[in-house]
Image: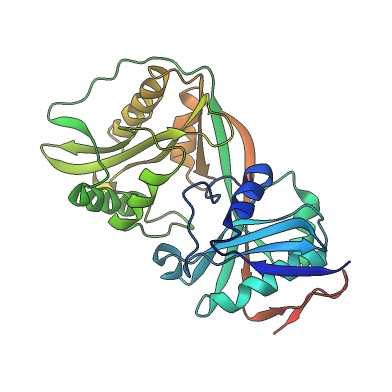
Length: 311
């Protein structure tokens, strides 16, 4: 087959967005380029063609949040013609943009065994696991807060609040594998996300001091499902029931807005959070596998048996 990888530009970005909409959720819907996506050096993207047929796409996030850790995180790496050669072609196109990055990471459902085998042949290896959980139906829950504790919805231009939100997230998740430090500016993209819900980015405060975070957004694959994310309490305040209250508040917030179910994800090693979610009625529906590949190698598009070699 005749393959060629084409850089994504403002002139063909609609093809990338359409491809992501049609195929991206087969692997990982977390950061798929959507209608607000713009081509930037921080997210090099390519389309893979077989003749005149679009058969694949790759988009690598090199934003400071990841690049500062020496990591490039794929928003999508997918082909409708799964073979070592097609994945190697996409990886070879992306690699020159990843100077200074020590490894590439992506997530796959554990059911995608064929894709996993192809990626392992190209040098990817399992790094960690995450679980996707669902609670259905969503239910209204009255939540009471300790004296002095309140939630504040953040607005797009609240730079101070965004900074506090980022600081709380970084404190809450500092000990979890794969956590990439969040900056206040990173929150700006959340307000542009297709799933953003007005009033759904919340900062927990006690006596005016930020101590926790919560985000509720529309789930990308099902408009009737809400997603809870960025749920955290700073380490000094963990263990006092605030995390449970935040979770219940998120479920209630979504239910009152007509969502019929809730999804969330959790790192497998975060056993305390997993126990909480299961105790609150969430059920594990999917296991996501994080694969990582060090960049001390060269991806060589070629035959299925010779798609990559050590660099």
